[in-house]
Length: 89
Image (spheres, rainbow, N blue to C red):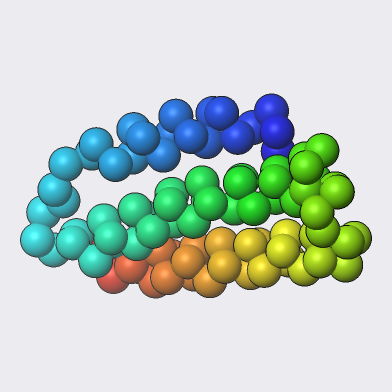
């Protein structure tokens, strides 16, 4: 994740500059933005607990919990995006 995080940050900033979607795709656009945002946050939530500082700060159980929660959040938003994609297909 440490190697992947800088690329995800670039993608995050590119995704925030895609413009306004057509009205019929407004919900899809919002879910896409949410997915990119949560993916960016997940990268930080996975990298930080396992960084040198994070290893000193959090116990193993806490680090694992943070990672599991981050992944759950991502899956939740991904399902919403898939729902919105079905609506426009």
